[in-house]
Image (cartoon, rainbow, N blue to C red; front, side):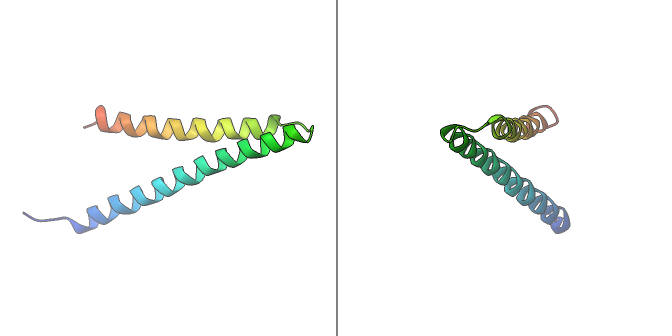
Length: 75
């Protein structure tokens, strides 16, 4: 049995980048929701923050759904 270390390293690197990216995107969504609450409490418009939060969460959900698709259908 021979292990292809280059392929293993490549998979590790891509997985690490995607995981950190998704966590950062989700964090931006939570931050946008926090700003929306703060803007609503101060009487300002919170539409841009709400739109940004929805976009972040939708992108996270799409990435997770695509990952599940790759695991279930392509495997």
